[in-house]
Length: 79
Image (cartoon, rainbow, N blue to C red; front, side):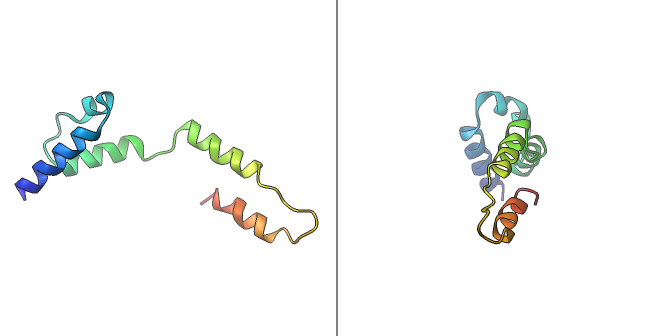
């Protein structure tokens, strides 16, 4: 287990940006690194929220067809 843990930690550290790595460098297990990253970055930021809102507003609702398919696509942004 220790060998695999060390490999995963090395791989994570290798692929993290320096500013993000600085936040998790003291973590000693892959699980604790992953949990820390998940806690920090799992919630969408304002840019993501705006992009989803904009995509919802840009969804065309056809005037000559039933609107249910368009509403279904819009509803995806609220899930």
